[in-house]
Length: 317
Image 1 (cartoon, rainbow, N blue to C red):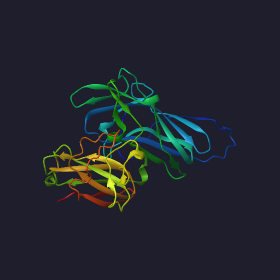
Image 2: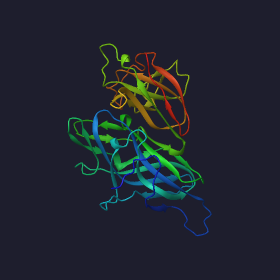
Image 3: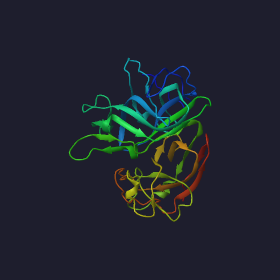
Image 4: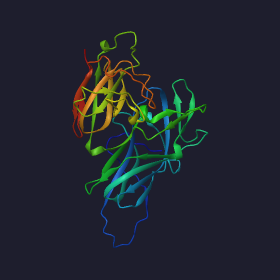
């Protein structure tokens, strides 16, 4: 399987079919080329998250449905198995490139994932070495919409925030479920990134440890009168006055720079509030855990992210 760990998307062949449309040669529909890649906002409890991508299904506002097969791998399989943890930050793995589709607004995208109870297609490996099944309800992830223009090839990143999307199975069943929560479609040509360092002195008190630090990112400024929530799958269940995060990222030690750092790779440009918490390891994506964010309480800051620009913000005493 050929994977490209590079921000620009490279060319590979795919198959496109349309359902429900008129294929008459007199069709005046405008077409444009698009590419799709996958990337990951890291999860802190896994050493491997393998996902087998099968097809991409697109629902256009004109009522048509388009099915795109992902590229076969080097072994001739008609799917791609990708360990998302190998493509963090600004790294990405190409699954569809330079595919012609009609321009306009697509109301939704559905990712078709291969999964079974034997973990032969999609799985996770925990830090203790245990391999568990990674299931996907109905083998589909229904995502939001996006727009295709008549400009040059548009490159879209399917960004997996695994702290939101990866959840343990309920009941007595073993394994994990991959859900659409936290999986976002980002226009690569308009994306930005945010990274920075975290002062070690911010890890004070008995409740904080060096492996429990996280940075949370929230849409918009002027959130000083709002409580900043941890990850939660159903934002309608948040207490009044709380705002849910757009994404979160662990703070990890960088052996090259000799400092604690965090990073967000593919983020739509705009106004955000970044907040650090020294004790957020127990943030479960299915529930509101009432984790203190920010911790220390003054460690929140308004930032502006610009298209195609990398922004740095350091959390300091």
